[in-house]
Length: 426
Ligand code: PLP
Image (cartoon, rainbow, N blue to C red; front, side, top):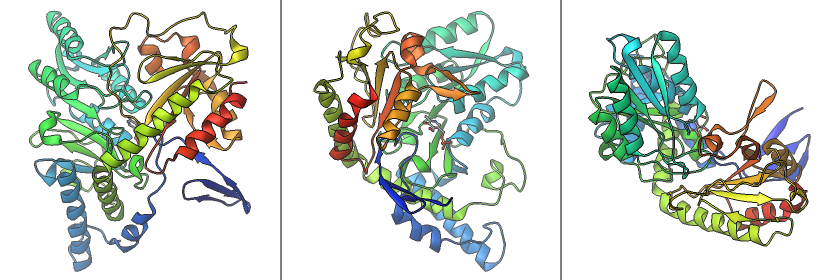
């Protein structure tokens, strides 16, 4: 059966159109139709070929690199390496930034416990070669502090180890919390380690200035800001050595072999430029939608107990779920402040006594696309590792629902969600 997606709000299956509300921008943004012309007009030639068509493709590729470097405030275009997306860029940084010499058994890699699996699993894969991998715990505001990193690095050094790489994301994909990347990078460098920041969720939300950020490497992905899937990049600070993951024809200065995706690079450049240029406007619009949601929750009859807690987690309890399967628990009791900075496009709701997958399915039945923090792997649902890391008990963490907004979101989307909520929490 042929299925076609109607740009933002509708899905047509076998000729029948159903309107949709899309609240899953952190998973992917709708493709920006303005990029179609760019894809169509880009060179199809091999950018490594010596003939005129190849030279034109090469010129276009380098133009894309230069524009991205400018938008991200890099020192030079050569700091941009094109990849297939965020996952590949994270893998490249985690595996490629390790020192070329020295015994793996004396080398320690530190990753925050709230990283995306592209980083967590890439780091875990290093254990097989003898590297030690440590998880850096966030505080209960889901912020990883420089002091915690400093203490962990000092412990590792006391026991004779060397910290070679530290990975902490710029903005978390489940809670939206912004991490103090600049301070963390300085702390990592003070211990002689390299620093990598996964910036996939920060693009188009935070002002990215690679030159001043202090990071050695950063990952970005085009599809999170309306670009095509399968296009991303790694920012690699000038002079930072990195081993390639993919070997072959030596493209991307030998860092990432494979015939260059020129149309993808041009569309990626346009998406990055637009996300950067429209950042403040989108931030304001998305902040208003987030507030409308949080305020609206209080007026939803089925919501028995709304306890706004951290700026990034709302606890909901269905009226008839008062005798919840979880012991009453306030995941923020004892925290020192509610001031963790967040990117406003992500809002996490904890629905006590319900499973995230069920919530997503019920919303889906109401025509609303959202996602849960639970990862469905091998048929069993795991609670969100991010929520568990900030101290939410497993039984509560199962009920995580992530709403995420973007440039195309409207107040009607929020109202549709609030209207559907009583049915969803039934
Ligand atoms: N890092 C973060 C924080 C993400 O949110 C994602 C995607 O959700 C990725 C990495 C992976 O990016 P991609 O989908 O481009 O592989």
